[in-house]
Length: 193
Image (cartoon, rainbow, N blue to C red; front, side, top):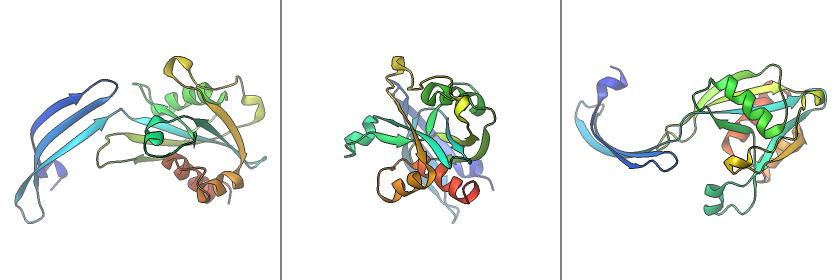
């Protein structure tokens, strides 16, 4: 039996579409004992995205970005967030979008990007799936300052950090972004062994 055989959607209502889409859904879920249970859920759809960790094996460094994130601020985080470059797909392929984001945010035009995994980041309420990439970079690949797009409200600082420092920043609380932690852990297991 597939999940599609276990769900009957009864009602979907749009609650907001100001920037992204928030819906409330009533559905029946077939439990393991065969009985049907009515459930209600809200889902926030902001589209799928991609994230990237540029790394240099020769320098043992990674490129991250630092920027203001309002949702983190209202949840008590009173600092700029250190993150992997990332962005929404906006109808592009994950690889094409992450290449564009890398240039916009970090200023690097990367040669090869490698998809390493996909993950739902908060599947209890958010529909977004992220595509995770890594790419080796060299200093001559930097074609601009990065910094993001001011028209999108971005004001991004580019950070080139020793890998061991970036990894330690998870433990001391300076890196608290999940996608960044996942990519740094991937790099620890598969790149900087």
